[in-house]
Image (cartoon, one colour):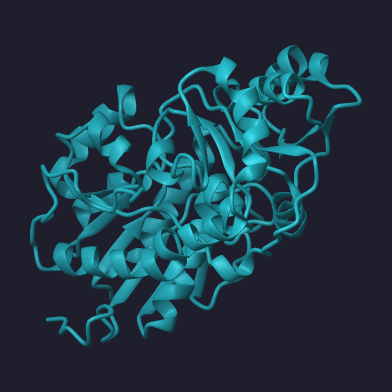
Length: 368
């Protein structure tokens, strides 16, 4: 039995096995929102005295014991099924030799092995929960407990076996705060049509602002989208600067007048939004997915319903207070906040307790 120790969390040393997806190092050197979030969670849990074992691919840069399945990580094969399946099988074999109180799985195929173990498995859903993925999680149902990364995500499939909602987070102080912004705007992400890089260019151009684009461009579908929709729009006022590593990302995010986030799908979170705000940089976004849970409209950015409203918002972003942006992240999306929330959920799952917010949809909604 795990005992409570103090008001700030459960600090008596749970044995936690954390399973990462197989595609990138933890933390990643470039693109990799899941891996970035996991690195912060592992560090936070370790600081709180928990025994954390990380199973992943490549090389880890965390304080936890690291047991790899692939070295190096098969990043170039992302999208193929075999690395995911083999990673799940190898991770299952590793877990079977460990003493654990809970397994926290962030991979896609890994939860298939949960039914064969005696300790509970918690799954954080980092992507879609509708369509085939929703059916997949329904089939798993009581073999796993699930954590959503936003209320918007959980509302899409309220019948899944939710244990709670925990927002992704960053170590706020690892992002440089800059009050004096430059006159250009930024788009940063993966070159997928749903991420709206072409819409960001159009909005910046309509506002008379130069835009820099930095993002992942490795998979064939990303190249296809880039060539059809992004490259024809590039010019003196719209420049692609490549995929930004952790250092370059921070430079760009801290200097930009605003981050433009014109997603066209129900994205369940969006790490880049909190990374921007941690740097004091407001976010101009379309009202889809978790955006209204993350951005406080008129305070830390602007949330708009239509693409044609973005240019005015891009221009108005310069009137917002950078300190309010950073304060918002520190209070709601800091790694310590996320770690404490996961500690509570681990405790409930280990003891077979229900999610106290089930049906209320009241957890962690932003205050305006």
